[in-house]
Image 1 (cartoon, one colour):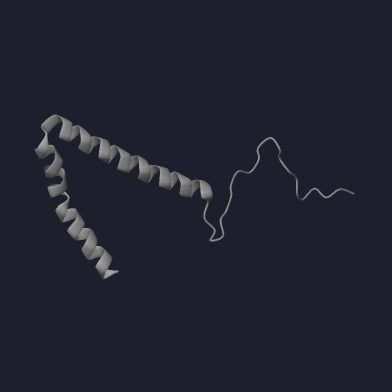
Image 2 (cartoon, rainbow, N blue to C red):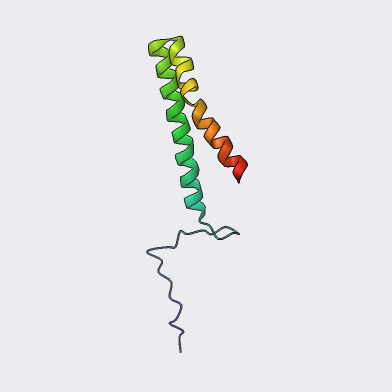
Length: 79
């Protein structure tokens, strides 16, 4: 008799790879890719503002992010 409880479907292979802590590697790579793309777009936008407006395009976005950095530091310090 043949065991039919474990049939393999070779037309649709399972691509899920699980790491030691139970997370999906593909999901981790996707998150990393999103973060890197976001940083790249921010840097390109900042570069375009420098190209368009000169020195004010350099320091105004940095000045606008000061409150954001303060909030992040407060959140980090509170745990």
